[in-house]
Image (cartoon, rainbow, N blue to C red):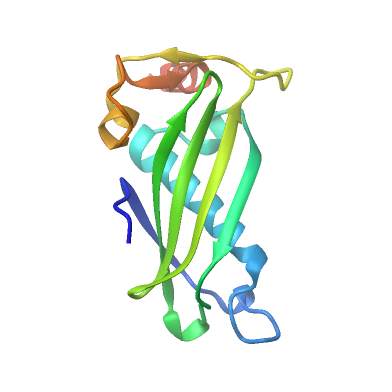
Length: 153
């Protein structure tokens, strides 16, 4: 298993299962989405709904089934690349000590007209401290995150 910067645990629900008795392949995308929601709340201190992003890429490689008896899955995730207006995140979906799937998403940060918006350099250590990327000159925060946090102050 690869080392990731953040983990969250999710309950496997009966509604997640398909007719074959295992978690349906489409549910994995929902698990990844919930992990992003938890990450933004726990690490960045903002709700994912406070940030204007769009998912532009999703890749999932399925390795092992997840069943109701597994009870929970652990979603491990970490920032893999930060671009001008995008963030690439890697994931591992685990059921017990088994890796059930690996995945990667690319999120693009957009302005109110849904056009990509540039990342701005901020002072919070959140992403830098969790990222295993090459050293960054400062933490990359996004304009919409900064303004959402400022509005709460």
